[in-house]
Image (cartoon, rainbow, N blue to C red):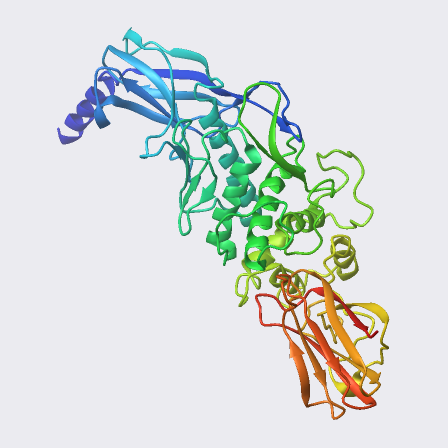
Length: 514
């Protein structure tokens, strides 16, 4: 009897009516405004809203009870969402600028105050529980939601790029705060974690959004000693701790576009946000020094260009398809730079471009390609190489120079083992001076913040007769000394790198007398 009763119970349960099911299908898209070096191209193209959260909502309820089902869009922006329900309702669909339904993808676009953006269908009244619904294609248009979903799409690309390199999405959640009327006139990443603020008119400036996304990656994975504050692309002499993270963030953003073969991936552009074609506010080409032609890594533009050349190639979507720079002999995987940034560069005392260079050749990484790396960096005035007078750290090693000769081009870079990783350097020269003659010794053309400290040593090579750290009325770190030779004899000129964030760089030395 027990067995029979059990069988009857199971049969009874199997015969009970199941919950009514219906399926919601459709697609989400947004209107994009492509850009190039002129600003907006004037085209408007429709792109899929990828990996966005979906909700089926009961229009007559509020709060958690209103949500009948959740899901997400696919890579094509489309969806098929099974809904279990037994009631006739007025319903609608909405897609959100959040990604909670995609495992590990932690991105969000919200207005100030935290409200996320939604792309909403019309209400569907009297929907029965057995009726499938195709919502068609819902489109967020320019001026009506397209901006927020474009920013969301840039975050999606950035997260996918990180996942390709690391094997997992970045975390924790990054939020881009944007509204067309928030009164924001600048873009910034809030130090710490994890909010990007975009200017009101920047929601279609893809490389600006990706640049700030790059700062998120820096703070979470690479280390960052950025002093923050205002900075300008045209400034060729920025603090090294500012130039590196700003240039690296631009490189990261444009690398995302390069990886996904986005058009004009070599161009960083900021617009006025105006309608129609054009509207460029400022821009620079990571592939060529067509503007902001700064030498050295005290420039964020030069930093971005150097890192770009390590990874771009003939197939990069730039202005010269099928051709790469003559000085650029590398087309390396993005992982090569990532492991440097996340490894030895992150733990350096001063996180500057020098720590990236040394980290590249650190034994723990040993990326190699020294000749190709030097060719790329030489082309941008970054001389990570000993000068021709090395070794000349001591009076005993010092070569002889003459007054009214030169200028002598020099670098603060020593590499005695030849592995590419540098060491701090001091340059010492000897000069035969005539007693009573006035000599002027100067350093000039300082590149990559080669802040100099100049000393004149007596014949014994140790006694300091005179020294100077800065020329009068200058701010570039150059040094000037005017001395009268106390007798006819051999003296020494010693040039050291003044205490600063960096220890490398290049400069010219010159000695003159009337």
